Length: 308
Ligand code: UTP
Image 1: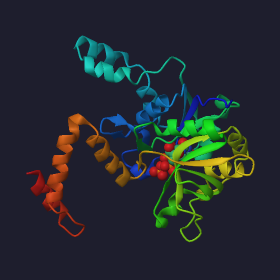
Image 2: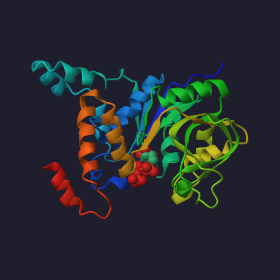
Image 3: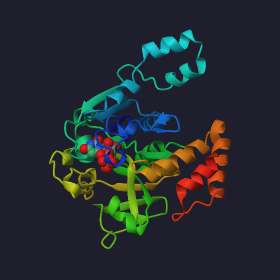
Image 4: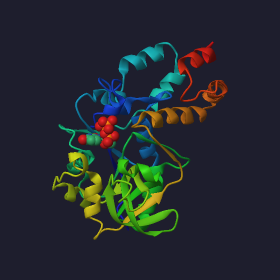
């Protein structure tokens, strides 16, 4: 019988430089897709997968995340006094059990591996999940639940993967695969951000992991990898000769909200999922589509025309 996965780490210590100036005073993870911050989507996914303990690895300037998951008494009382039941219900969904959320400080942004390692004492000797909130996933069954189910079957480390265009391998952790049945693959190696000419495949790890505590022991070495950062990928790769490493092509769509075009696409996709917004979004898309915007257009003139 395998130990169940009940703890999840949410590394939120990054600087979010690709979203400056929005992220100068606000954490990237608080950027809203439609009307919900990225981090709340990730926490809801984790709870939907049976996670009971939530560990945020935060850094300077991330206090808004703590406030978001706290009770806001003044707001609650004001909404109650005004009879705003729907808004109160929205707030109630964010609530956690007392003691369910912990915050660990990553004093320096030394890399994703370092952020995960900062939570080692809270994890102890059991498998755990890691979720990166800037990978937003639209799925019928939470992506993390799909990973945990696979972990129950096969054990070892299990990560979510997707195929990426060949010319983009240098943006991702890429897998060297031995067995692949089209849904689950087994990897014999991992490379962080390889250039397309040396990439062993186009199968890329995305921000959902179920890991064994051995990975934390590997991170004890604090070895720097690509970009001078302590990489989670490197620590996982060092366990591969003794621990099975499975990769799941999950059911669902992932949006890379760490970059602007991915974030914009997620906003459209999630708005289209919403009954109260779908009609308005389709109308907007039709209007902008009809304006025949291309790279060479005088875009601002056309946008002004569309918005008239
Ligand atoms: P990114 O590579 O997206 O870095 O981190 P970033 O700093 O957040 O964003 P950019 O590239 O400057 O725009 C991937 C994930 O790892 C976390 C981030 O918060 C994000 O969830 N992270 C990264 C940490 O928690 N600590 C780090 O030292 C680095």
